[in-house]
Image (cartoon, rainbow, N blue to C red; front, top):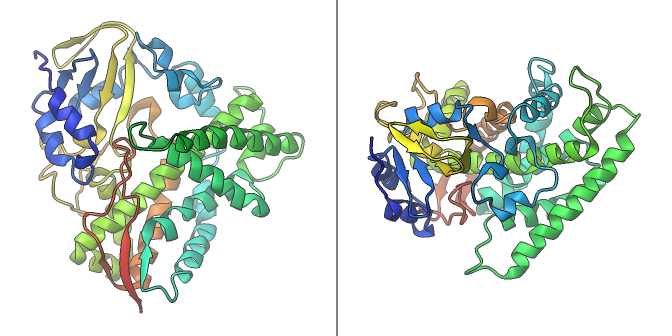
Length: 406
């Protein structure tokens, strides 16, 4: 297949005016599965081609393999393993997974469930007396921050300042030099620095003092792959914080928005709480928290769908487009929690499949179940709601809901 330059479609997708509904534009993009852009980069938008690329060992996640490295990514002194290639990626991911999930720590997520339920219940209790609530500010944002603090072993008394750093850091992800004050970016840079120093200080206290939190486990583990350096542990903690937090906020918020737009499904969930498991999977396909992997690099010339992509080229992966591909999913623009064949790309695929996915799924399941159970006749105040600027991590920045207690 010969590539066709489709810069206008991509520009419209990236433009903020399309943030509320980029899906018709994804359909346009899929007409050319591999599209070369004016700057020499390539955009991949169809399910088959995306899954092929995500499993292709000739594609790199290391920014240094781009012909024109991106300054922001290259600035990381000790990158997280998500921005590494094998064998280093595999080694560090194995070491993290030993303490984060199956097969070595199979009970981590289930062991957290009572704590997750208690945090959710406390947050919903805080809605008392409010005629309107913001699902983002009042619920979806503080929930994962609290979970991550407990998971990492952040002392309760330090949670407030930890949240301030997270807020500044997450806000800086959406920085737009044309419209945002420079302080927004500077605050994010400073927050990243202070957060790393804070995590490094916690880590020093954990050496030789094993406990149940993740920092302690990583600091004192000598598994088959040895032990992470302190810098690697801090980078892994940052990855969990940023990627895991933003993913969960968007998943919960997009989920509540979708349910409010589909009141019959909301009522089904209220009547049948077990529906939440397939429902969250369908949300990950239909309204995923991560829409785009902004770049991969070609180690060497690679051919995708008959198109030769030269070595060093930047490749943009449109995951949300692939999950709405009609050649893979029946009636893809319909929200269907009964969908059975649902191998979506909501958490990516291949060696970089989101390692925090099991926790994010369970957080969303508990959060949405309790919101639906405890909010009586909730209604949207504004539809569409205002969205974050980012086309990559896509979700409402506010979701205001009118409510009355049952």
